[in-house]
Amino acid sequence: MESVLGRYRNLVILVGVLFLQVLGLAVQVKRSSDTENTRLIRVWAVDLVTPFERVLIWAQNGSGNLWHSYVYLRGVRAENRQLKDQIEQLRLEQVRLNEDAVQAHRLQALLAFKEQYISRTVAAQVIGSSGSDSSRMLYIDKGENQGLKRDMAVITADGIVGKVLQVFPSVSQVLLINDQSSGVGTILEKSRLQGFLKGTATGEVVLEGVMSDEQVAPGERVLTSGGDQIFPKGLPVGTVTKVGAGKDLFLNIQIKPAVNLGKLEEVLVVVERQERQAQTADVGRVRAADILAQRLPSVPDKPVAATNTPTTVPAGTVVAPKQVAPKLAPTSAETVAKQPVKSSSGSLVAGSKPGSAAATQPKPSTTPTVPGPAKVDPAKVDPATANSQDSPH
Amino acid sequence: MPITYTSGEQLEVYRFSLPVTVGVPLLALFLQAFLPRRFPGFAVYLDLPLLVTIYFAMARRNPISGLFTGAVIGLLQDMLGHNPIGIYGIAKTVVGYLASSLGVKLDVENAGARFLLTLGFYFIHSAVWFTVARGMVSLTQNWSWSRGLLAGLANAFLGVILYFFLDKFKQRA
Figure 1 (cartoon, chains in turn purple, orange):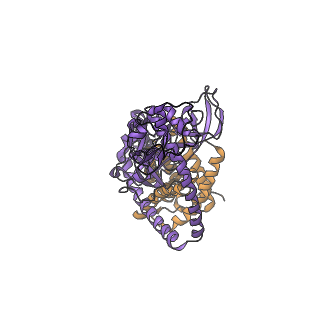
Figure 2 (cartoon, one colour; figure 1 turned 30 degrees about the vertical axis):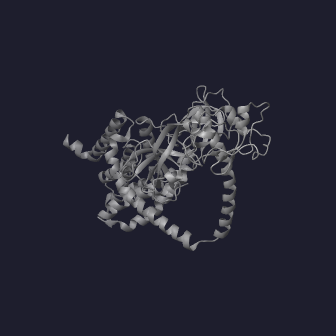
Figure 3 (cartoon, chains in turn orange, blue; figure 1 turned 120 degrees about the vertical axis):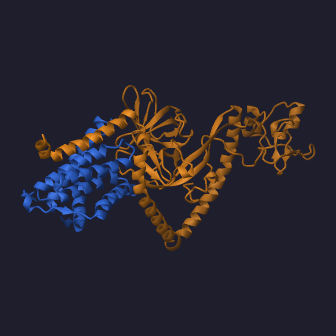
């Protein structure tokens, strides 16, 4: 027996080592797909590799900043001019969007919507990957010490990236949306069809769960639905690129992610979300007809100075100068209501009823918090934990 | 380039200093994790830990040392991902054992032999990896011959260059 073992010593050791690994693998598979069981030994590997990555990223960023900030300034003047033009255009657009947002806020309040706000994010730098094609994930330079937890959403300004898979003291693993073990609840922007996003073995992203009798067109945007309880609703996911017949009465929809997952440098981790009901008190009892009236073209008012003394309205009241809904036979009360009133900021307000919210209730700010699905407030990026103030926003 | 069959007495057995033994595999793992950040296709086609496993196994010409080198490097590679630990470990254990066993019998010093052996070991590694990943862990993986061949050639080419540099660290046992 000893001579046999001695003769096949190498082979016996090989079989032994393989057996141990197969046993370990079987235990992990049997227990669960959860990686918590092997957390401790993963920490060793992460601690071995990530310090080098941090140092290299730090050196790379340092030299890059030096070069781009002080040496290579070619074209900066032209770019500056271009950016100023762009700012002017964006300001104009912002005015328009603000109006729409205020309108949306009031309508949501009427419908008693519950909204999710991204109230705090932590900016993190991508420092590495798994190095394997079968495990599509990233390492970021923030961890437990910065308040990160499992299953937190990871996003950029362009769209969603993935979720936090494992958290170590100063490093975290992020599972990308194109990994085959990931899943994201999504909704198509126009058709409002819901499905779930999955990664494939080849790193592509597909939308599953949409029935084959539905119409989905390439080019349609895909947003998060909020159904997975990880990603807030309404974040960009990607665009439909190809639609084909899939398995079992479902469509095979290929998605191009909104974010270039292969070239990520900085990401935002959503560490705090708030779900709150739209504040109906802000707008009081506003009738849909009143809202509509402000949007409709109107006949210019007569000069008011002779008939009415302007009434003071608190700052921030929604103002719609020269927009009065045409009315055929106003009553006496309505006649009063149609007279413009003056806000504290000097703006004229039309169409406010004497006892209505618009006329009596103070509005808290001139730039109201814009409710909407998952808004990221750049000012709320945690400066203490952020790498720099130059977040992707 | 022919792979020559050589008797055991004619073959040189090499050893490496402790810093090289520990540092080179760690550097390979670090680069494997870091470079895909800049070059997204890197992890798809190249496997630096595999090349290091093959090199150390062939140079030492000791099957036990080869299989343990493969096991340790493979397990560390597994730990950096999120899949169950052991898939790369098993594949690299087999490669380490075979590379060192072949190193005992063949002259693996010339570039042509190294190229062909690395290409062959890449396919063996992929076959074992796929078998374990699909059979035990139920990972859905699609094998593409064109991509596999391209990756095999890329690894073999890089391997020849890498082995040339690593030769400078080896010492006669």
